Image 1 (cartoon, one colour):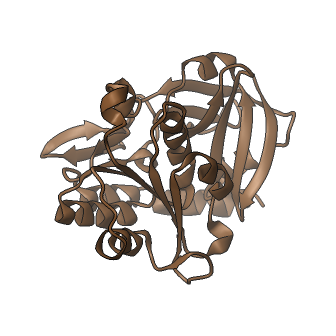
Image 2: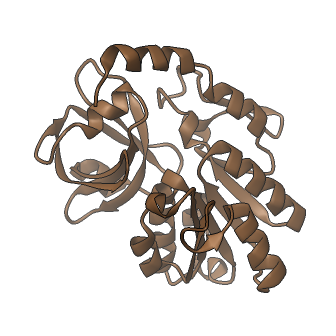
Length: 282
């Protein structure tokens, strides 16, 4: 059993939990995820690691309450227990295996949309701890849904906020912010790492390719089983079938078939709506 040490609301229906999981905390790396269940008979929910503290033995996760299972998880209070918290799973971010000196000469830009700020944070934090400054764009539909800006501001070289309605920071989406930085502010980047809604990542990837900038995208939102056995997270990358949970969740964004991935996301929408109707968890 895994105790919830801290729980706080980041935005409407979006919660951060710090969970006591020493073995996971010792091994976790940026880019990986855990499988969580709210009860013994509950659904397996893959959640990207949002932070980890090896000394305290805690792992942070961010959950958006959008379905029955995620609502059951966020209904738990501090001090209550999760029966399952398995991980770390998936492949770590590729840069952690690269030469640190080479990384220090590379110009990184991270682009996070919505809950995507959570898995971006440990990556930016890892690079910051290794003396590598990176720029970060965090986007949301309005200021109420900007996540982890304070935390990212402490580890990013430059943090840019973009909101669709202009209520905070740049008035426009993250792709428009990217173009603003390159076209009007003289920014130059060697690599973009983007995590967020699938449609957002698609257009970030298209813009990155237009500028000739290497891009990586995380397909964590496709995952269900987390072991590759269910096949729900199959995606075409460069014309080859990959599984987001075991081969990723991060892939070359230029090569991802985003349209196929978005179709896959809608496969169980009817069943989820029926389950929400029956459950009616507030």
